Image 1: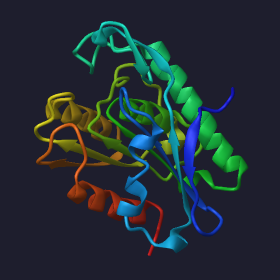
Image 2: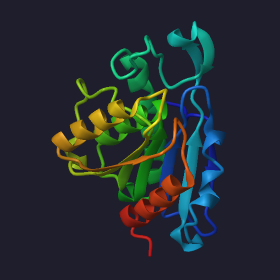
Image 3: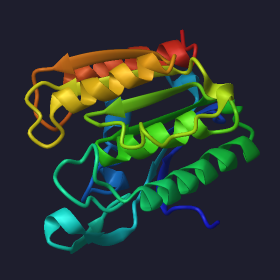
Image 4: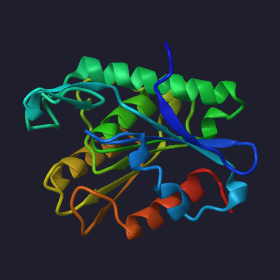
Length: 221
């Protein structure tokens, strides 16, 4: 499989960790690129940040308009009616990016998979089914789209998971995010959940929390 087109932000020293960060519906890899300096991580952390671009496809809930999307959304109840086959295909493409990091010398236990909104749903599917142990899973303003069909790989049982959500989110209601978090806890994952007084976006308080979590799961002093 050819790799997804993507942006890479290289550290000052040779990378020994990687964060693969998926954007939301209608955006592209540039969406979260500016977050890297805002995290305030030390240069010696040696993290390579990878921001893939989703393919442009017709999206049913947007009247078939073609836009960057990881999968089609078939109706507004986005936690239930999605094109699962397309979601799985996107997860496979993200797995190829993880494989490439391993080939480049980054141990899989030093790879975090992150995603916002629709990208978060793909990140969840990818991380829980990946056949090597990962460092962690970060989901932002997202939902567990494949909760009823996923077949997790036991190698990532107990994977550290951080879920963040805005309490005033009109796009992915916070109740859906909390439902996904509860399912992850039920499945045995070391998930934590935090809300913020925002809509469908991120804020500086959330970015600071993400930075602390990266430090923890990647053992950054």
